[in-house]
Length: 125
Image (cartoon, rainbow, N blue to C red; front, side, top):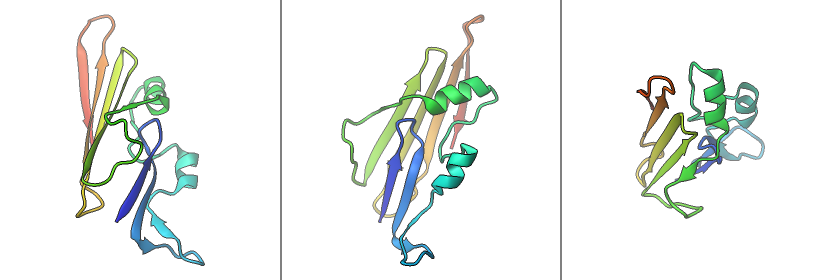
């Protein structure tokens, strides 16, 4: 039905819909991610967008840990990617289903204030 490829930074590099083709000659499997455009804009699917450019760069360039040791998952399956530098924590959760190519994701971003010791939290979809 579909094939999704993540980078080590937990962004989607390729999301192919196996039952659909593009307009190329000869037709290729449709990929929802346009790598040239994403590379130019830095806008990979599920990249973190923050007001702090330095933290955003750190979160999007980090090596995330995945919840499963398997390099390939087969639907139905869940995957959770997490990363922290001690000040910023990012968690991205994905559910892959056999009935549909998109089931949604939930993510959490937490920033710890070094001076006050309090926590600022955020979410993204």
